Amino acid sequence: MKLILTAAVDKLGVAGDVVEVKDGYGRNFLVPRGFAIRWTRGGEKQISGIQRSRDAREIRGLDHAAEVRTQLEGLTIELPVRAGDTGKLFGAVTPSDVALAVKRAGGPSVDKRAVQIGKPIKTVGSHTVGVKLHDAVTRTFNSRSWLSPELDRARCRTGVASRS
Image (cartoon, rainbow, N blue to C red):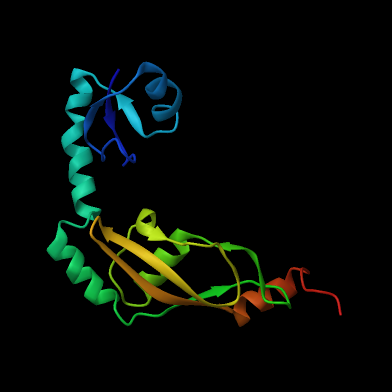
């Protein structure tokens, strides 16, 4: 089965690539999840648009990855979160939260799929987060999750506050 990838798929290709896969893999996994579309002559015209959008958000090479890495050096991001009295978060910090916090801290725009969180962040405190900029370049930095007073006040207003 011939498909056009709309997203990066490990060990297969990146968005805009035309790939040949087994029928079951394409029909049951790639197409339903939106990772690929069936190849047609009309779909061939969409490849340039997919590749343009990929190039706009992608690290362009090793030199560009090193440049972004220097921008990330020394950057400590802060994540305001909602947590209970024991410091345990309501939910977890996601890669998209980290990517948004990097942007707010004055760092470069980072794709949320490039953020690597080793162990889920479910407590208030300092944590190490990695960003895979290129196959050869990965940068780690510190993130600090803290209980936000604004979020805590919102929790009290909605009646979710803990009982004493």
